[in-house]
Image (cartoon, rainbow, N blue to C red; front, side):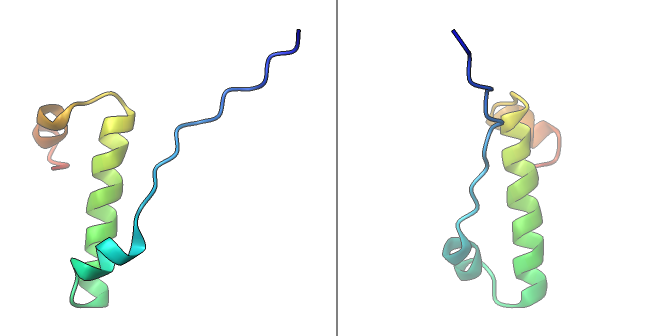
Length: 57
């Protein structure tokens, strides 16, 4: 049979949570960047300790 292509991993960022953690647009931008890089670390197979060691905690 025909095998469907595998979908790439998806990272969801929750807008309101990020907005609540930020007081300014600059803080929001930094929080988005930090969260995205942190989650990319997990997507690449790193656990919490590994993500922290990479400076993405």
